Amino acid sequence: ERTAILFPVISVDAIRRGLAARPHRGRTGARRAAVAVVLREDGPHPEMLFIERARRLGDPWSGHMAFPGGRVDRGDADERAAAVRETFEEVGLDLRDAELLGRLDDLHAGVPLLASLVLSAFVYRTERPRPLAPNHEVRTALWVPAPALVDPVRHVPYRWGLLSYPGILVGEPDRHVVWGLTYQLVEDM
Image (cartoon, rainbow, N blue to C red):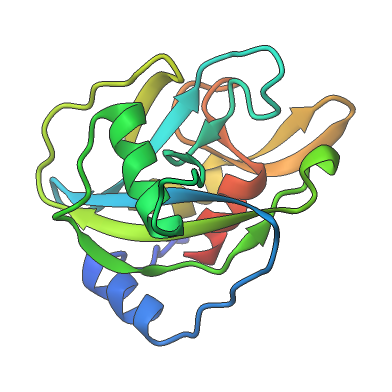
């Protein structure tokens, strides 16, 4: 007798309702960064955009899977403006007309030298975006079906140095594993 694994129904409407039903928990910190969690409906299930960051010396997140985003600049009106700007710069996706579904809880970055860095995440829905155009900061961009993110088979350990962290395989093994802050944001969704 086989046991079926039932996945929750993941829809943009369910995500919208879930984000609206809970309060956002902000954090304080002198240095701020922001990311965009972008969903598109291009098939039976919503898909989520991930980027593989280009490898760069001195970048603590070099080569990691992430959401598009970056530091809040002086010219940014706020964290949300930074997420929109960074998404356009990194993958050519314009979120100015996209639907803002909500905001996830802020996180403190866990890198010791950047201990005061606070990460804000904004969740967007976009309709059939044009093809992505990654810039020099992005090695590749992937649209991942939302059900894949809750598939237990895709939940794998990610080794970083001598340590092992929970991760989600979203592409090629040993290359496209979401872990760390991005993993925490996916779990928060």
